[in-house]
Length: 155
Ligand code: ZN
Image (cartoon, rainbow, N blue to C red; front, side, top):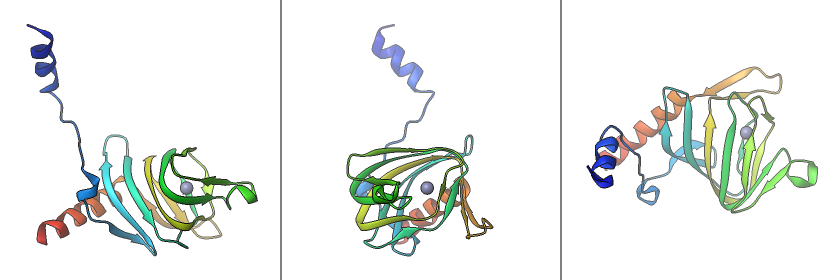
C-alpha cells in the first residue's frame, strides 16, 4: 500500500470542516453586532465564530468561563478601555488570548470591525453586580448557527 492509499484509508475515518464564510449570511447577535457561527462542539464546549461589529457597538459586561482567542480581520477593538486606559487596542492582524476567568466590562468598536473568535467554553454576560444575565455556551451558539442555516434554506 502506498502513501496515498494509506492516507486515504486513515482519512476515511474523519470528517473535516471547510466553510466558505463569504457565502454565509450575518446573523444578528446583539445591538450592532452580527455573527457567523463556524463551529460548536459538544465534547469540549469550544465554539468558533466570526463577529462583525458596527461602529460604536460594544459587547456587554461578561466573564470568560473558558479561555478565548481572537484574530482581528478588520477595524479596531478596544478591550478593557483600550490601550490608553491600560487595556488592549487590537488592529487587523493582531492576535489575542483571553484567559479563563477574565472579566471584560465592555469591549468597544470605534469603527466597523470583523474578527475571528474561538472560546474554549461559555461566556457569562452579567450586570454590574456580577449577576448572570445570559450564558452564551456552545448550545446557544449552535442554536444561532442552526437558525441561520434554516433561514438561508428558506430564502
Ligand atoms: Zn471578553
